[in-house]
Image (cartoon, rainbow, N blue to C red; front, side):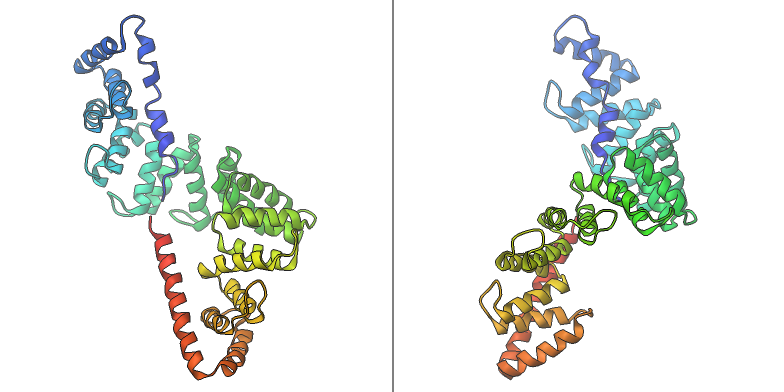
Length: 378
């Protein structure tokens, strides 16, 4: 489980810091900090937390994670939940100390039991991912539910996902829809997308293409590529709206520019057909090339055809054959056509060229596999 809200959790935990100097009506920042240190050393838990925040953020001095860790520890030992959360986060991310999931788990648990929603979320994630504790989907579900009920938006999203997947609880599409709805209404793009998908498929609710279009649009407007692609498809096919190739082209382009291979393929087709834009084979070739390099078999076949016919690129039957081999390595609706074309082109070029084309295809596939492996890395 990723943590898109780390900055939110930090902001909540250190919210009181800007009030520091305001609380001292007289005196310089240095004297104010000196007074704060004196209070912290006397065991004042709020002073300890604020002082830790100053060191963590580097306010009035350079950042000092080690000092921040020490003061968060003192406040946490007194049962101060925001400090327990910050202490856990520092152990989790290895700030001022080596990463230590077991210790992070311990402090997240303490803060979670005091009702701290960000810690409840992190605790759930650690149960789900098996970090600092054995994997436990039921416990993950329990803590996500507690955080979600407090209005913690990422927790609402992941709780919906657990209901949808039946992890840690029985599968319940209606409950998944409800929690995605709550997070979506607060602007959470991932839930907006999933909510749109559920309306589009009729999961947990009657199928409603108009509602799907609405929620895809909201997530797409936030730059979420999958929603941009699905929104483009709805405009292209006239689902939940009248057909609009210009709008489809716009949203395919948005997603394609973010690297979505399937959108790159559709964008290439629209350029080649002149749908929603002026016909432009050269640009169509470019987008087929981008999608093909990511392993999209349909784009690989389209690229092979353009090389074979000399459309948008200089005719090159050898390169066409190499891409036909790459595209044909995956079963698809085009498999029979690809096989026939391989036979036709292979006979024209001869056995030596066929062997070289196979070698070229292997090089292309290796490049695609390396790119995929790199993309999967955190």
